[in-house]
Image 1 (tube, rainbow, N blue to C red):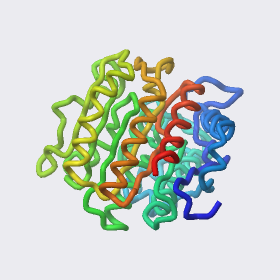
Image 2: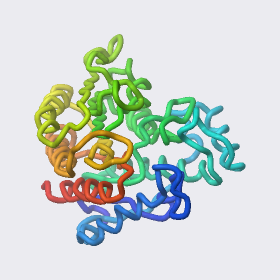
Image 3: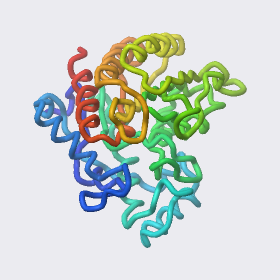
Image 4: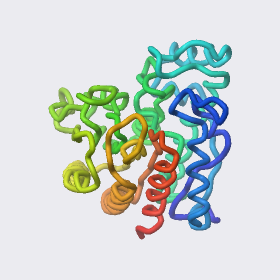
Length: 322
């Protein structure tokens, strides 16, 4: 398919290497089988014939360092060699090749960003990405490097954008992104997540709206456990209004599938209809506000059927909106 296709989707075995359990070792919810679950449904649905399929890329140290501290990057490199210990307090184990796998998540998100910025596609999707918990100086919540943060810093530093909208519909609050940019008014942040009183990481209260000059540029919407599509649809217009008011130049969506009913570690009850709606409406807003620039990152999700259905719904919405 020609490179000017409307939608780019990034697939390849290098992306699938990011995970903490395999087919033979199911001890960690972030399985290396997540990528295949999406790809099988994506191809079964015939969507592979309607998009430009692109290969993964590995980020350089300098690119990762746009967001992360060099000392932490070197720690990941060292533990990647040994495959021993944890990269945080116990959620994110090191494994042989962890650095290369995490750097590929970042590099692929950056390649998708570049494709959108150059006009090679209007919208792009990277399934194994959206690792929104990692801090600048540490891993957290299954996230080694925060590709969302690297993309945002790249848009600010390399492309000189002045307003970037980050929208997160993962069940978990995107704390690694929120606190990294809490005082940065250039980053417009909107997050619908399971109330932090009930779920990791325990943050994202509605009172958290940004600090200093950035106060009012952040929107946190805690959802009750068991929230369904109708609850999502009731809150979603607030997100659209918020984005429209701030007129971003690029929209970044973290569309974690762990907010669907049946995820083993969360308590939400959406169907893929909520993800389809978010992707469809953000596509329209991107066309109106920022030359169509929209990048979606898969995020969390630990039920393979949910991953297949929700991420395929996002891609289908990207294709259907003209």
